[in-house]
Image (cartoon, rainbow, N blue to C red; front, top):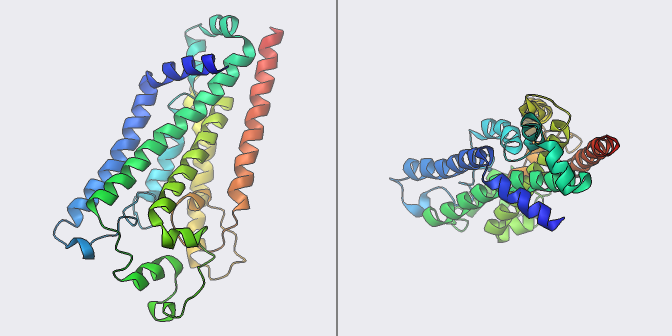
Length: 287
């Protein structure tokens, strides 16, 4: 299996689709840092944007809704449409015979995860590194304002605050080691997109043409979630359930979060993917 995966991985990283997705994501991540550098170029570093606020998946990024709408397409591009491409070139039967049906589909599913994960994670880490080079971690400068912006607690009340807010997952880590928190956030969103890469692959193996349409289900999920975001922001009650899946993978303090939602959603995606791939594999074995 590992030899097959390595072969498929080498095939993937040399594909135009992978390079396009990686380049697009890298340009957005580096471009956002460059934008902030230019925007704060005339301001003293200690009064400039905090290095963690400059993270592209931080809630203050006004372009974040556009970015998250692009993620499903970026997830599909690296390797999820490989089966459809092989089929159009009439090379699928050759690979199936050479590799075996099980190894063929399993290795491609793993590569779909790896490709979608890497095209998100590496650019995000680059963004974090650049932010920490060009900006300072100013949490000790105006720390109350920094805390208040995330927790919706006024700076005046914050002086008496002893507990970390439950609106931010792993809040203690965020306030004590924000760089590590941001890296974990980058890993989490990349892992989720990797799972989505497997799901889109499991759909694309059933599509004869236009496999890029396998990105459509997540586009719908994200679009509906964005429509609900305004309600989440306006909510002052934890009884409100935030169904915007991407809010769980960005650095924010929105209320109404239940982290079982992204966990169950990802689990459902994996289960559906495994079922679709298993049915397709069994069908090809019978042929």
